[in-house]
Structure formats: C-alpha cells, structure tokens
Amino acid sequence: MAISSNYMGPLTRLLLQDKQGRWLLTVIAVLAVVVPFCNLLFPPESVLHVSTYTMTLLGKYLCYALLAIAVDLIWGYCGILSLGHGAFFALGGYAMGMYLMRQIGDRGVYGNAELPDFMVFLNWQELPWYWLGFDSFAFAMLMVLLVPGTLAFVFGALAFRSRVSGVYLSIITQALTYALMLAFFRNDMGFGGNNGLTDFKDILGFSLQDDHTRAALFIASALALMLGYLISRWLVTSKLGRVLVAIRDSETRTRFLGYRVEHYKLFVFVVSAMLAGLAGALYVPQVGIINPGEFAPIFSIEIIIWVAVGGRGSLYGAVIGALLVNYAKTWFTGAFAELWLFLLGGLFVLTTLYLPRGVIGLWQPLQQRWSSYRHRRQIPAEYNGQEERA
Image (cartoon, rainbow, N blue to C red; front, side, top):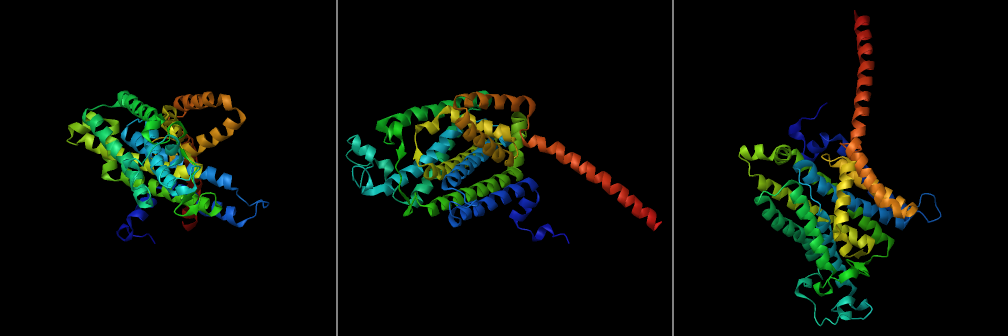
C-alpha cells in the first residue's frame, strides 16, 4: 500500500525522489560500518583485515568527495565556476590544525606549553591573538565553518554585487587562493610558514596514532559526507534550487523576473564554502599535516576536474568523480609519477569532448535500454493474459 505523502517526513520524501542518492548513501553507510569493523576486529594476517593505511586513505577520499559536492552545488546548479575553492578547504584545515597544535602542549620538541614549536624556533614571545580560543574543540569547529563562510561572504558580496561572473569570476577566485598561498608561506603570519602545521598528537584527548581514533575519524568523514549530500540535495530540490538553476541557465532573465540574483548566489556560495571548510577540517587529522600547498591553484583546478569527470549538476556524480580521479591519482603517481599531470589533463580533455555529462552520462543510456527491454517483455505477457480471459 502506498504511503501518503502527508505521513512522510521531509527526509523520506527527499530520498524517495532520489534513487541514485539512496544508492550512494547506502554504500557510504555500509563503508562506515564495514571498514572500521574489518580494521579493528580482524588481525592483520586475516584476508578480511583492512589496514589502517587503507582506512586513512579512504577517509581522505571521503573528505575530497564532500569538497566535490560543495563545488558541484555552486557550479552544477548555479553556474558559478570557482577555481579557488581549495582556499576554503585549506582555511577549514588550518582551523582544525590550530586546535591540534594547541593539544600538543609541552610535548613538543622545545617543551613549551604556551607556544607551538615553530613559534619558539622563530623567537616569538607570546601567542598571537588569533590563536586564542583554539584550546577549545567547540570553538575550533565554529571557526572551521565561520572563517571560510566569512571570507566567502565578503568575497561573494563584492563580486556578485558588481555582477562579476563567468571567466572573470573564475580568474578572481584563482587570484584569491594564490594570494592566500603566498600569505601563508610567510613565517611572520604565524601559521608555520612553508612547513605548515604538523606533529599532531591528540584530538579530544585520544591519540591520533590509535586505530580506534582513526576509525572514529573515518566514520565522522562518512557521516559528514552523507550530511553534506542531504543538505545540498535539499537545497537544490527546494524553490531556492529552482531559482539557482534559472540563474545558471539565464541570469539576465531571472533578474528581469524580479529575483535578487546576487542574494541567491551569495547564499549558496557561503554554504558551499562552509562545506569545503568542514571537509578540510576532517582531512587534516587523518593526513597529519596542513601547509600552504593546499592553497595551490592547481588543487582548485583538480576539484573542477573531479566534478566534470563524475558529472556536474547531480551531486552524486561529483562524489563518484572525486573517488575515481583520486584513486587513479594514487595509482598513477605510484606507477607513472612524472606522467600524472599529463594524464589528468588528457582525462579532462576527453571528458569535455566525449562525456559532457561525465561518467554518469554513460549510465543513463544503459538505464533507458533496460527500461525499454522490460517494457517489451511486459507487453506480450499482458497481451497473452487478456487472450486467455477472452
């Protein structure tokens, strides 16, 4: 018996309309249970054992997938091609890194409980004001969202009110992340300069070297990815989402209809930046380092390639693209380290020429053929049944 929509919750209605999303969330939920289970309960000599290295690598991929969703939200649905989203990812990572540095206390190389090692090495006498409060995990998590969100709000307000769009906006976002990279390379900024922040030891009192902590971070990454997907899906299926698509397809016509286009673009840009910051915060404790290299313009371009390969404008395609490209990167950088960038560029060119809808574009023709095949099989059966009754 069909369930009336009046008795469904918003989450149920959302999932019922998104078959591919249900599959994606199911796979992520299964991974969130199976991978830590196999890591913690099976001994290393067992064929069912998942190594801590593999679990950490998968956790990093999940963070990248959340970052890809953030980019797809603005590029696939609103037409904002940001080539600087790595900056928001890195800012979230630095906020988490500052918290982890404060947790080291007097266990650093110099044994100074007040100052991180790199500040002692540079003869800093006191902690900078912008490091205050990072002893608290709650404050750090607040900054993980607020710092990227605030930067996105200021940048977006200036850009969208000035009606900067298209390739000009892409160039400006590249300049933004490049400027931040140069700033964070400086030692006098108080963020560790070229070496960044590293040598983390604890998070919430639990050792980062412990397998249980690693498993908890993996589960947290999976939950964050599922939450980020649901939030983004809810946004794009709402009235706001329909306005975003209208802006993507014809910004001038949407403005002519009376919508304040810049407000819609600013809102979704800030939400996207906060999702990217959350991804960066989960990434740092798993890889153990954050440095200015995360601001590099090439990283932001790589994110665009993930989304393009997976298929923009679908959210689940962005996740698939991030996982595929990063797995390929891991394999190719081991087998053909010097050729990886050429292979990545070639992959992007081939996707642009032959797969305008990305990998998920390959699935839809197969799905249509399967539906057509099932339809052809059902018609004779129904026809024979009618003849027998006659």
